[in-house]
Image (cartoon, rainbow, N blue to C red; front, side, top):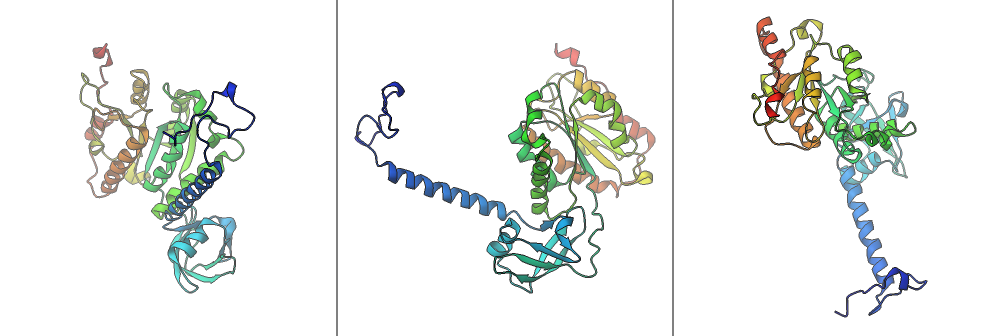
Length: 346
């Protein structure tokens, strides 16, 4: 075809990158079309990102008295001006990160450059701590790009503490991600979590803990962060053919010390894609009081498993306060399941 572009081998090309065999092409026109397509793509991605703001969240350093000023170039201001199309005198849904949210903040002024001046209600205790989600997540560190997708999902669904753990199937190079760099890593991680909170409308930022040496972390820090009598420890793993059937999330009972020592919680351990290493990591976690449960025989991607398990966990924890206190015998039965017989698979 005359429209086909036949490029010469690299060794036969001239100094000009536009030289080709066959019919010459209008490179200027092609370049212009590429620039227009790129601009349209970036605009659509930017607007999609802005549309995810269901509550305008701000840090303490942006608060002066009871007034918040958001610069015009900030995506939050662009959301109010471009998507919501609010005017001075309208109300906005805002919230202080790790503080109190409100649905009745006053947009007192919009400056010529698009900056917003927001006044908080006089009766609002801005610094009142928000309720912490009663579900925590222990996640074997996924690939860096996948972790970037998972972090907003985690904060949207609600997690009190996120533990990023090493595992046998976790590549060591994953710990070299830009999210773990000393300069800018913590800020980028927090920004991804805040994106999820802006979508859900909540203000409690999940606490992020690293457990690169997973075995040592289980031995020295697990009981400190997640006491056994207050936190139900759950280990998610695919159901293998030939093993006794695992339990389900709905089978987990409330910890016996939840009502006396504070709200009961649940810690869910989600392994790498393909599951935790068998039998070593399974035995390590069950030794530390984790109850083995499953979503079935399908091997799920980490993000799918996280979303599914967190949704089921929140639904169950919400019902715990309405259930009768379990007896010691029933707690012992669920908290110490029979050890899976991995030898039968060999």
